[in-house]
Structures are given as structure tokens and as C-alpha cells.
Image (cartoon, rainbow over the protein chains, first blue to last red):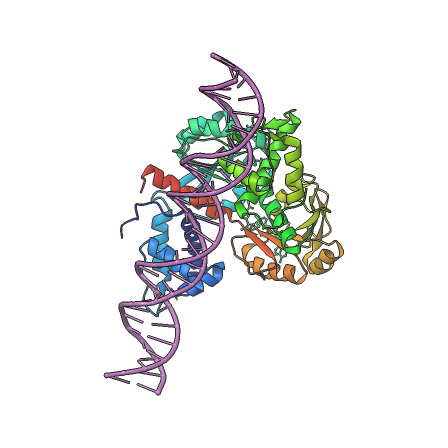
Length: 214
Length: 214
DNA sequence: GTTTGGTTGTTACAAAAATAACAATGTTAA
DNA sequence: TTAACATTGTTATTTTTGTAACAACCAAAC
Ligand SMILES: NC(=O)c1ccc[n+]([C@@H]2O[C@H](COP(=O)([O-])OP(=O)(O)OC[C@H]3O[C@@H](n4cnc5c(N)ncnc54)[C@H](O)[C@@H]3O)[C@@H](O)[C@H]2O)c1
Ligand SMILES: NC(=O)c1ccc[n+]([C@@H]2O[C@H](COP(=O)([O-])OP(=O)(O)OC[C@H]3O[C@@H](n4cnc5c(N)ncnc54)[C@H](O)[C@@H]3O)[C@@H](O)[C@H]2O)c1
């Protein structure tokens, strides 16, 4: 089947990633077919949303039998994954950076962390969970040498704009920024930012609202 | 000034948290007034969005002079923070949990992590970055005793639904779930979920799209 | 065979969020 | 004194996202 060419909605892409993860669990339990409402229950969303997402990727199930788990996993893979896989680096091998490295390691075969970068001499040329940590000065060199396309930024916040700039120069194609300082990249570089403090403050706000606490 | 009673839009709440952080930086540099386009630039959003958000919280700036940094920080504080502060716990003191504990510690005075929970005997009754780790069996007891209202879940994914259930029983009001497995809570408990693998896969998808790579 | 029921795929509608448009206003400059 | 300008606050429009409605389908039950 041909790969969809028009870009999918942001939120659909997110859900596809989750569908796949959950479908893999189902498959490992021997489940071969699944209904939209089953998928929906697992993720606390509505069956309609599931069907709509699947419609968008052009997948069609069997009436009264549901979707073929294996087929769907494969299709989502063809949509999300790049054929050859993409290489990822982590800039800033501190608490969060190391945590991410050890977590991601060996999890998704098509998306592997292949390098870390840090400025701290104590970390340079050490290996963390199988990932070599290089000095940040070698960012450009290593990214080009290893054809790294995605970078995760976990340096101290005030450093992130500078790091992002270097990453762009090195030719990185996508950035996932976990520092609370927003960075600026040209439009051809895809940028995703997430701030955990903001998330926590958001929870706090809505808890306060719900409770009517002042 | 009275606190806005109607719930603000989700995204506005997120941006308010960010406005405040950035305004605090400005204030520390001695900046007393700021224009909407200056705030916008810092966060890579549009000035209109800033003005619209500020309109929603009923703050009004001075024409041609902009917004009073100090006043705005205070107002956002009155909106986001609860008067007395909220207490937070981390369930699952593993790599990510410890990273969060050490990071959040002492960052926002109104939102403090006061306890960790784990099942691993080696972690129980140890102190991490000033935070005591209790055995999960004491979840109910400690949450009630210390009046903890928010929990961050960082246990292995398959454990998270069970943990969420216990948290709800213990009377928690808000949950921030960092495991990739979605949890189910009653509507009065505010739930926020974030999955880092999904984020990375999303970046990967859009990088692939942008590049026209197959 | 015909009806019932469960499930899909799709279209229509609603809500949330972002963007654009623009009037109002006061400051500066001519 | 008046015109030009920068900036705010608000309303209108567009885009994105989610929800609802429903026809089509086919299996099973009657
Ligand atoms: N730790 C968390 O749980 C957490 C949570 C939310 C956000 N964050 C954000 O993640 C970032 C990192 O947090 P952390 O707790 O891991 O901090 P950390 O201090 O443990 O790690 C930062 C690392 O970046 C390195 N570094 C500094 N400048 C660098 C540069 N120019 N290039 C490469 N490496 C550089 C440091 O040597 C250090 O190893 C911060 O911006 C923080 O706001 C962390
Ligand atoms: N480490 C990361 O960077 C990272 C990134 C994304 C998502 N996550 C998610 O965060 C979660 C934790 O990841 P991690 O890398 O910190 O794992 P980890 O194994 O280092 O930590 C998990 C901790 O939870 C404890 N635990 C197990 N069952 C428990 C229970 N019922 N109650 C309380 N504690 C319990 C374990 O003893 C352990 O200390 C996982 O769900 C993972 O998917 C982690």
C-alpha cells in the first residue's frame, strides 16, 4: 500500500504512535483482531476518533470483526517510521539526558539514540547505557559523520538557544526541546517543545479550579 | 483584583506559566515594562496571542508603554498558584522520578515535592534531594497526613493504572502521568498525560515528511 | 427470508484555538 | 495643531480538533 503523502494532523500522528504501542501489547497477548471501541478504551478516547484516524491513514477494517492487529501495526510503521531508521542525539547528558538515554535505548529499532554531547570534561568520552558522550565542540562533526537527523535538548535552559543554533548549522532536521527556554529554528527544521514545570503548573491550576480553592 | 472564576482555556494556562517564567527573568534584569511583541518574541508566538491571553485574565497594559512586569507576574501568580501552595508526590523513584525530584526541588515555592513512593526496598526510607521516599503501601496514609493534592506517576508503564487507582482512593486531586500507559480517573481528578516516546516519534514523522524521505 | 444488532466509514456539526482585522488612544514629530 | 505612528483591546474569521449522526453492511437469530 502506498504511503499517504499529505501530512496528517498533529494529534492524529500522536495517537497513531500510541495505537501502535498498544497494538503491540495486544499482539504479544495473541490478540489478532480488535474493534475501534477496544482501542479507544485502552487510550481513554472515543471509538469515533479511532475510526476517524484510521480513515485518515486509509486503513479499512472488517465489518463485525474489527481491525487486523498485525496489518495495522505494519501500516502505522510504514507511516511513522522512515525506511532506514533515524538517528537521534542527546545534547546535555545531565540527569534528564541520562535518564532519556537509558530509557530509549533499544526501545524503538527505527529510532535510536547514537550519541550524547556535553561540555563537562568528566562526561566527555564516557559511555552511558551504551551511548558515547562526545564534547559539544564535536557536535557538527559527529552529526554529519553519523548522519544524525534528530536532537533532544536537555542542557541548562539558558544554553538551549545556542545549542539549537549549532544543531541547525550542523544540519539537524528535527529538535525535541525539553528545556523551559523556547528556541528559534528555521521553518524547515521541525521543532517540538515540552516543559514539565508548565505541565505541573497546569495541573495545579485545574486542581485549584475544580476544588474552588482560592 | 478579583481572581477570574471562569476556567481559562487550556493553552492559555500553559502560556501564562511561560509568561511568568520569562517575566521573572526580565525582572531580574531590571526590566520594568514590556510590550506584547517582546513577550511574543521570547516564546516564539505572536503578539496577538499574548494580548488575547492577557485580555482573558483581565490585565490591561498602558498604551505605548506596555505591561508592568511586576504587576503581571503577581497577577499570574494569583491565577495559577493556590494561596497556600500545593504539595506534590512522585510515585516511582526510578531514573525519571529522581531526575524530576532533584530538578523541581526548590524551584516553585507554591508547588513543592514533599514525598516519593517506591516498592523497591532499597529505595524505601532513603532521601533523594531532600525528599523522603516511602513504601508504596503507605501511599494512602502519607497523602492524607501531608495533604498532598498532586501526584506525578513515573513507575513502569504496566503499573500505572493500579497506581492511579490507589492515588484516587487516597484523595489525590490531580495527576501528571509520564508513563506511556494511559490511566483512568474519575472526572473530578484532573489528569494530564505526556509520553516522550510519542513526542519523539512525532518529530520523526514530520522530519520524514519535510524531507520527502520514504 | 426477514429482522435485529453490532460495527464500520463518512459526512455533518460543534468546540477550541489561532490568526487577522481594526478601532481606540495617546505620544511624538512636523 | 495636526498628522503620523505605535501599541493596546476587542471583535471577526479561519483553522484545527473533536463529537455526533447516520447510512451501509453483514452476521446471527428468529
Ligand atoms: N531533570 C529533570 O527532571 C528536568 C525536568 C524538566 C526540565 N528539565 C530541563 O532539562 C534541562 C536539563 O536538566 P537536568 O536536570 O538534566 O540538568 P543537569 O544540570 O543535570 O544537566 C545538564 C547537562 O548539560 C551539560 N551542558 C551544559 N552546557 C552545555 C552545552 N552548551 N552543551 C552540551 N552540554 C551542556 C552539563 O554539563 C550537564 O551535564 C534543563 O533545562 C531543565 O530545565 C529537567
Ligand atoms: N527514564 C526516562 O527518561 C523516561 C522517559 C519517558 C518515559 N518514561 C516512563 O517513566 C516510567 C519510569 O521510567 P524510569 O526510566 O524512571 O524507570 P525505572 O525502572 O528507573 O523506575 C521505576 C521505579 O518505579 C518503582 N516501582 C515499580 N512499581 C512500583 C509501584 N507499584 N509503586 C511505586 N513504585 C514502583 C521501581 O522500583 C523503580 O524505582 C516508565 O513508565 C517509563 O515508560 C521514562
